[in-house]
Image (cartoon, rainbow, N blue to C red; front, side, top):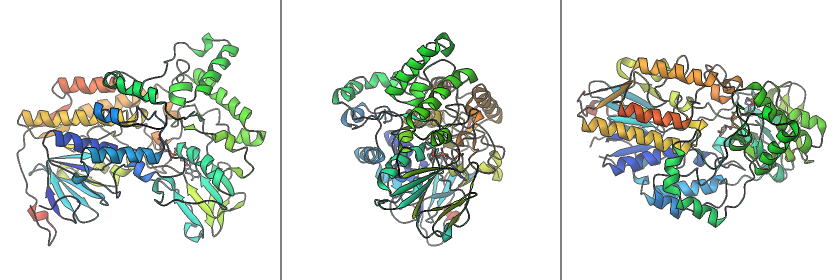
Length: 561
Ligand code: NA7
């Protein structure tokens, strides 16, 4: 048998994992704990996933660092000290590397290796993974820990090859420092990423031109150094917190829930209250949680959205620029992923920043020395694409995933992603997803969510082993009901209204489906437990036997164990 981290070839383990980001590492830890053998393939040269790739200036988590941490180990929680309320990418990556080292997880990871296919052999009851480096590996179970935002999207503007300057996508940022000093830089995109990068790049570049299609709502993060006693207090209550957080809507605590509707306050009281929230900082846990009904009721939403529009006019000195930065009235606040920022709107008061509206005069092409819109040519020495991802489904669909009888993930998702609990897809036995479409995922604290998913998957694998079975598959019926429930939950809110990556609207031709489950992490986690306790209701558990039958599939020259 060849060991992980060596070149090529064939390996058989109990569980195969795609990805060594936050999810992949926790899966490896759990498998090790129960004495199961595992191998993870990771496209990057190191661990970290999202935090390995997204090294752009200003990259930072938007959930409080103490909560955006692993919670499976009290010792780990006690020993790690976060320096800031919202940690920046380098610190997050250091943390993930620390975890990989502390639990000795790297030895089960093969780096610089991307999974290209996953095929299920029905008779052998095994998954076979193949990689871009020619590896073949088999296992009874396969877990896709491939991330929700891991397939970068760059609009196919013509003329990229003509551009003589440097260009970057924020999610494929170089490892060496990029120096924009003295340069005329253009940035396309004002999602969470653009909003983080724009203030930082503007402080370095000679000039920054921001190409904005849809103005976004954002609120100050009020990031700051973490006081040692704050952290100690959190660490002391960690074990309790871990339980508490399972009973929260977004897998986060520490913020007041709304107690009244905005119409119960006078306009002056509303203004004072929202002003207080703005000063405290934050968006999902602050402005969006200021009054009841902000996520579901147009009028309630409008109160908060108008407040942000007023703030923009108050902060941005040039009224024309302020107007251009104001999101349209038909865009509910919170219906696109809500960003938080440091000095975003203030940045547009700088002399070296220009805002360009590319909704009404779209980008037509790149030229040798810049970007041409329908109106004008902008001279640039560097371009940053902060244009997002083919979210939630893109990475999985890029892998040729094939179950019994040639049934593929592409077949299963031809009309948009269908899953049962965001964990499994009917027709693809023994293949699990972490934070898949149909799970709270991106609408929750992702680390709490991935631990919950992994724990549940470990539970079913244990259960199969203990009951002499070796196959689990979501039933069509359970999946159909779950997809319908997920849709109904979303449609009862304002969430699906925006052309966001939540609904796939950012990718031309992608089927419009609100992909995350927005019924609350608490409700979801309780339901997963209940389903397991009820003998894995909606899943078919069976015994198939089989074993390793893949010698015939070995490439010439590859040796089996
Ligand atoms: P997002 O949120 O998808 O934002 C992408 C931005 O790029 C957004 O402002 C888009 O405008 C813009 N975009 C995309 N295509 C074009 C074209 N063709 N022309 C002009 N502008 C364009 O990605 P992020 O990386 O910011 O954030 C992704 C998630 O990562 C984030 O939500 C966090 O969860 C972490 P649009 O709004 O579509 O008009």
